[in-house]
Length: 190
Ligand code: IMP
Ligand code: MG
Image 1: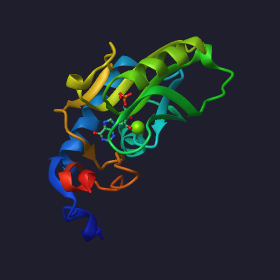
Image 2 (image 1 turned 90 degrees about the vertical axis):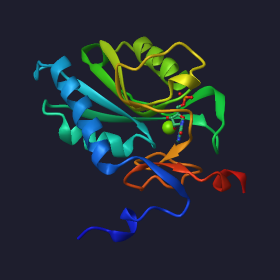
Image 3 (image 1 turned 180 degrees about the horizontal axis):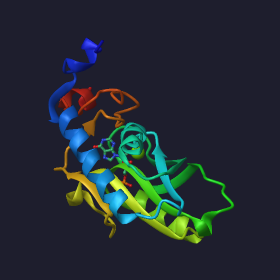
Image 4 (image 1 turned 135 degrees about the horizontal axis):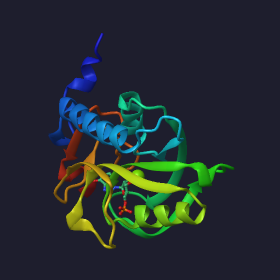
């Protein structure tokens, strides 16, 4: 039975930007591109989920990709709290693997904003010796870019609005909403 509560728009959400059905299409598109780009099932492919915002996207994507994948997790800090980006990237949870030089990695990220997190992380994983690194981002806010960075797979470009749901949070809330929505301004102003 469907959870009725989750399908009613949350009182704090101004409007739904990307519906569940649209999210499913975006995931299917990216999964197809990854299957096409990594056709050899005997080569290891690691989906590297960046906690916590990418966890829902990761779950749906790994089910939709047809080829075999391994999964792993890293946690990095970019936003302290609220909607303001910080300048430095800290690694809070790292991967420790002995097979980096035999590993093609696709980083699974919820959203690219300034680009600082992904620019730092791709370089960090290159330095660790990964054979190849690509980035799959569900959402991209190109108008916010502060550094030169482009993801390899992008679900959807969005305007400069703070979005929540489908894993994305505002102060740890709203991650479990099944859609991507825009918060009402009173939520951050109060
Ligand atoms: P960047 O280093 O500025 O590109 O930061 C990207 C990270 O900021 C994402 O992984 C999110 O955790 C967070 N972020 C950026 N924009 C939003 C948003 O609109 N909603 C929720 N989190 C966001
Ligand atoms: Mg994040």
